[in-house]
Image (cartoon, rainbow, N blue to C red):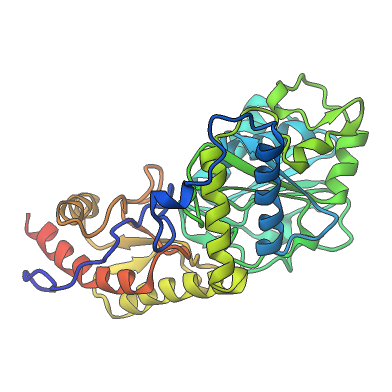
Length: 375
């Protein structure tokens, strides 16, 4: 550690875990072809929305028989749509190990008031015992714990011959981690995470098994219009062809399309994963030599390559001071731990972040820690 400021700063200081950094080279000119001042239901508007869906399928490798829809209210809206529309037909296991997963637990237990909901929990930094899950019922879980930096290592814990549905909040995993869609019946995410899109829109992906549930089961509670995926007992196919439930921002749609085309230019999903892995590896190597920083995620195999969470020796005030010091130097913005998580830092390492910027940040962490400890 040293009091001397490092000589090199990250070119882009945006390490926020959402909204995340725009893809390298992004400028407002990328949005010049946005369908503005026109109806999203016009031929041109629907074509652009359909383009976003088509590119999503291509980049993520979503099976042809899965449905992809653009829905309101970011990942939260997409998850709530799944919970309110699908749950109640079978018992459900709610699996959580960080803040957002715990939020879905609360909604199911306190809002939907499901009597046969079981909680399978673990503290920050750990993964629950996934062998406890009863796949004769439904299960709700996050693939990547955005606020803890802990992810499931793969989908091997999910049986192919399950009877229930798997509902997966994948908002900080999509476009950076491999997800086995054959094991997943509902996948949700938002544009503002790994691809750095603009906020307020969510994506929901449904397997044929999820569609069958929607068309054969009617929840006991009323559904708001923005949650309704069926009409007359049949799936509303238009939602999955670009005919959105409510009015989307076509500026945000264009931004997402541009990000997806950038993703294709860097090698698609494999290229995106490689970039995120390289970013996380820089921090991992730094932690290995640090005498004050530690991964919150205890097991390397379940450690996130996007939302990298660190704990630091010293009081909870140390990381707070570091965050202010780094922002004042225009070196790193918004890297404090999530408010409900243990005190520390959370550095976004998704694919839109350049590895050279992560490498440039590491000496600044040493500098900021030394300054914070002196204060």
